[in-house]
Image 1 (cartoon, helix red, strand yellow):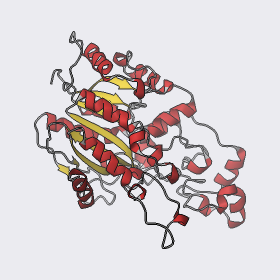
Image 2: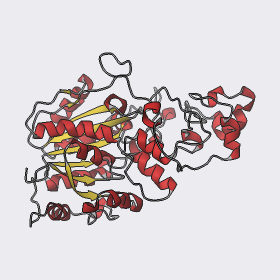
Image 3: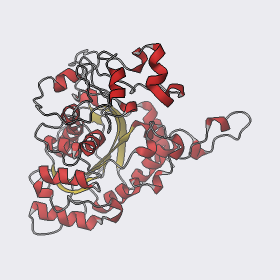
Image 4: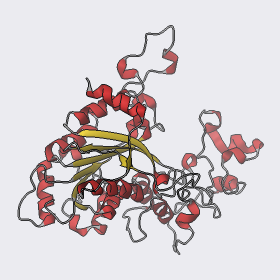
Amino acid sequence: MIYSKPILISLFTGAFGLDLGMEQAGFHTVSVVEKDSDAVRTIALNRPHLNESAVPREIEKVDAQNLLQEAGKVLDIGRTLKPGEVDLVTGGPPCQPFSTAGKRGSVGDPRGSLFMDFIRVVKEIQPRFFVMENVRGLLSAPIRHRSHNQRGENFPPLEPDEMRGSALKVVLAEMQGLGYDVDYNLLEAANYGVPQNRNRVVFIGSRDRESISFPLATYAQDGNKLPKWRTLRDAIWDLNDPEPEFISYSENRLKFLRLLKAGQNWRYLPKDLLKEAMGGAYESGGGKVGFYRRLSFDKPSPTVTTSPFQKATDMCHPLDLRPLSVRECARIQTFPDDWIFDGSISSKYKQIGNAVPVLLGKAIGDYIYSIIQEEKPKGKNISDQHKFLFTNIRNK
């Protein structure tokens, strides 16, 4: 290491959730890339040493040499860093194309997305490790979606790029092309002390081909030999927030929410009111679990959304007839109470909902940090299914 702490460069930084977790694990952030103006002000307010890089900028226009130059200034070493001197590059390229909540027909080839800019920067900076996170939909997403009414005996067989998992194969192949050993897994944030059920796909790459896996869980749903998953009550019961920030429900929404108790959603409304309450969604498919959803204190929060006040993504307080506040959402995402978010209430919700939970970032950071410190971390290997896919890509 060229600094007393391992150093990281952050891409697609957002509100700094993943990187704050990495900092808690012992890393030092030396440069960030983020295009959202409110998010970069959030970073600058909390990390003044990143003021030079905390400006709105698109990764497509960012040169890796500039990032290395910024890092050298932050470290005050009198020179630009060289490729290979950065310990870690982190980032989560925009996930909408792979999200199961979106239209599956819009998946598209990862080679034509911002994912390739993540690959480009890693190739030019040559960090010892990289960490990339994304939504679970990436594990099964095809590159090209064929409508279900165009499948079956009377239609041609699916092409390779129409098969489930074809997008993941491209992602892994591009990572392999960097010369890194790569491992990936689907992590449940609740298993690492986050009071929230939130699944994220995490990739770890090792330049020096060090043995890597993933951190062991520290919490469990049933509590068998581990503490039980933390709940919404654990997250917010002691929050001192005299003037909570939230976007109020309309009277029309309140009319139906008043009929529900904690832990209930639209399914518990009187049957004669369902059509009126649900509107156009009444005839649509899917579970619609987010409609008129009042949370339970005794379970982990569902995934914090970017709009906890919207009809389809309701996160109504168990007791109060309002959405969870900005600070309550931040607590669930395990941001510290002194972390300042800039922008409108809607923007703050968006920054928090898009973030990686801080404690999940810390668990990953602790694992990588222990490797850098030449310890032997305890971790879990990829599943047999992942190994099969990974081996096939390696052998191509």
